[in-house]
Image 1: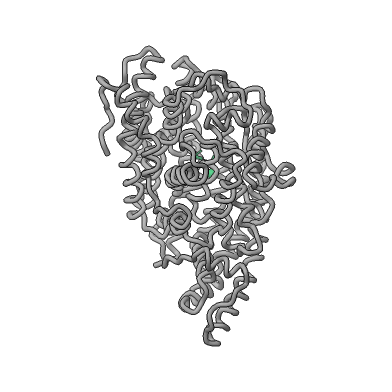
Image 2 (image 1 turned 180 degrees about the horizontal axis):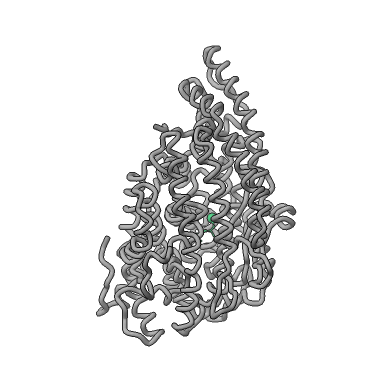
Length: 605
Ligand code: X8Z
Ligand code: ZN
């Protein structure tokens, strides 16, 4: 059993300032010194091996050449070296032995030792062959996912092109073909995912975790069942609002496509591949962000994000960010491809930070850029001499996702857009339409992330859901949580869940995003009310250093502090979906009016 350890910011400040502990007996002091020597050796070696693995991953994911095996071989070698170190029996035994005497150690040391054990749990030396098989399988899966040759109407295409069609195309027949093209990669990935599910489970069992999902949940100090309860509670709070949005969307889409109103929304009617984000369904008159960005270069969009963070007092992105990042999409006929799912990389656990993106000048990518730069600034904030290398992570994975998403929300509000001089139109946009657009983004995401993704991954890892039922179960969950139906028969010849990036390369952790959305509305609510003293629906963060100071104070401690304690300390509240529910309450009431006389087909949970 892992114990939950917290350290207060005051203690951290004392540690950082080199303050002494209260007097202790000499045995304790020498144990602390011994543990510190161990941690001081572990840190640099971990950092060196992490950098090598990250460099290899970076090379292989920014340039995927069909048939070229050298990049994959380099990744395997570097990942194995890192795994051998983090999972070594020596490290496991030492960390365990020291932790048995945790009362004699500093809270920070205990936290670091626990992190060492957690990392070991992902790669234990006692399961060396399985670890190697898993690394090889992961490398191959990534190559197959991002190296896949998508085709539409007999021509090579990319997911960037498919996404553009789903966002804008009016002809349902073309939409259907694009949607189907996006799912063609699934069967290629199915066997690899079955293998990976088994390997991931077997590897973590060596150190006593029940399964891979339990291993990932343990980072939050929770068992899967406890996590499920928390996630379920959040879902239930947001369900009444989602039901209204679902009803509104069914009628709106049926009108748009000249079809009878369906009970379940056909998946290809929605503006993205998984129905996770519907904001394109509600364009707002006088607020055309896509139009305002259309002529801007991808570089400009990223620079704009940088300007925003700088205006809050964050440092400019380091020159190496601009030199080493991969920001542009690769054309369908380039002869190579890249991982085109946006990500932010902390290469050396220090100042080598990079983005891997395929920026196109749209409102949606503008938001993604703010999200990714949130990760980058978090990395930079905790990469200081005060924070040991092992603690250079978010206070929780959800925190890491939250800050940038919140900046994305803030950067889309009209007064902000006006302040940065984006020409979105002359009219004053209707606040209710704006709120609707935001809900179609943030609220619609919840049944997908906290429902479908959470539940499906939980079932495959913790309940061993047989692969013969994967696709069927997927679509049952999509129906139950999202109220969406596939446009045709999706039997087990398909593997639609595998078309989602994270299912392959960021497994059993998608609920991080659900938690992060809850957190982001709490933070935004706090900032709007207590720092800016503005209506949360109509803020302008630009240039407000107090906001930057607040965010930096949350980022700086990295993983040295428990995230719930951090949240309490900074906002006075525990984790709660209330601010998110309250934010959209005027919209819920408005939707009830709009939907009067319409039938809701989504059952309560
Ligand atoms: O994967 C991401 C980020 C990278 S950390 C772009 N997101 C999830 C997704 O795309 O499915 C952000 C929101 C959800
Ligand atoms: Zn992210």
